[in-house]
Length: 230
Image 1 (cartoon, rainbow, N blue to C red):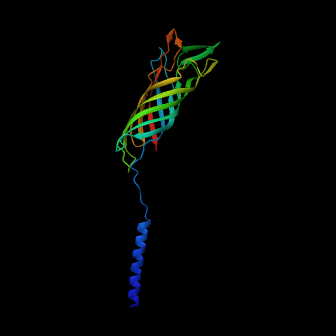
Image 2: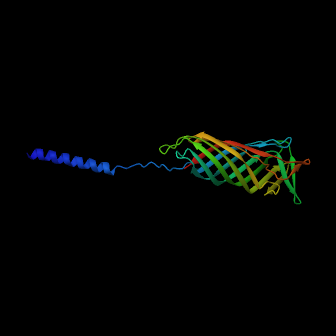
Image 3: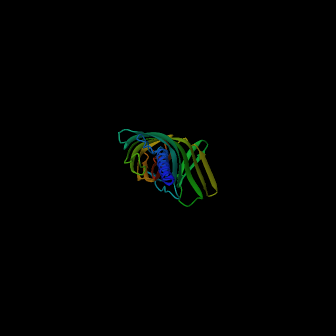
């Protein structure tokens, strides 16, 4: 009798223990009001368009940009959204357009490629992107296809050109001939971590500046990778 009583007590104890474990097990709540892709980081290759005759690029011209976007879903399934934000970018171009300043006047000249040690243009922008988003994400999974189409306004904060060659060094900081505002459309497409971004500048890098009495009308075309973080 004493043996059977122990068995009953053991079974009751196990049942209570199992119920306690079930109560204590964590409950994973699905966030049906989730947002996507709040922070971004991108690296692109820059290709100059509408360049003056004989101008060519050499070396690797790149842009690094990062920032924050506020994701605002506009349908019940949250597959469509509008996003607006701001960020910063650092642009660098290696090419053979020499910029010099003499007595307050800006001068421009295309020199033969390879005839100098260094010739580059650097720019820092504050960016204001606005985009329409489609993605097939769900509350349970953040691995999905995305297509984001947008328009970006960029405000020039700082610029520097430097030429070093043939015993001469020219450095120009914040060239007044540069456009302070640049803008253009862009497209981002990809799966999960890997996304391709394409951007085309609609207006010229220069607002003034001439070579042989011809206005410099260079624009930029960027293509590279974009990464998002919630």
